[in-house]
Image (cartoon, rainbow, N blue to C red; front, side, top):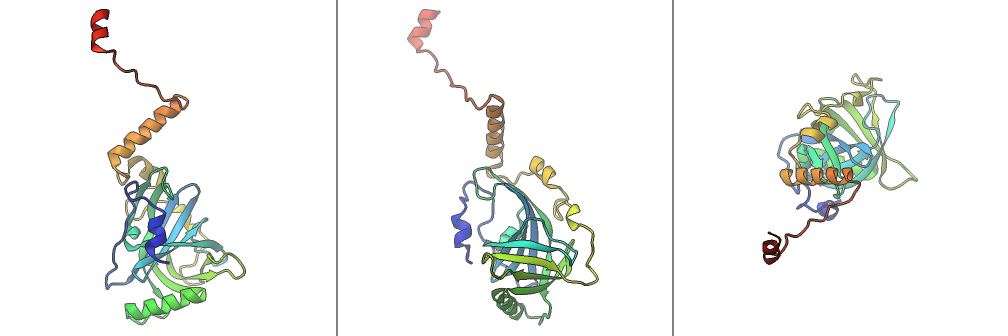
Length: 234
């Protein structure tokens, strides 16, 4: 997928989400963002071809090899999205609060030391429907596999932890704070300034709250009486 679909779904005058960005010559990057949209989920993203190949994981990643977590492949996201943490305003695609739940570098299970060659191998594996990677994150470490489900929706995959020294039965999603800001989703929602037109968005949210408190009725502002009439009333 290219960024065409990503951009088609969004109005960048109304959302603080990134529009582009380029990777560097360093290691391949990954990010997992916790996203409190219409339904809470985790966005699992791997850098490839200068963009972030992305999957929505409803239950979040697991360190337990027994767990096979459904991962729905979605449109590619721009490279700079790996740093995005903030609030996507209501009325926009994916509206809700986003935190960087985990981030780091990754590589194929048999890295060559050459980024271009590693990407080529990863893209070939992605196309085949069986992608295996070694992750070096704060929370996610070791080997993971993404396997496309056969006979299901084309974008349906499973995210599975391999049995290695990092495998655990502990629920890693209990570690619910951002690895960037140290904040939870709730704390980010209250304090984030990364909102479309921050002040404007805050005023909009306040107006919505006031409107809700009034039962949804917006008061009609009365126009001032004409000057001549005000003089007679005096």
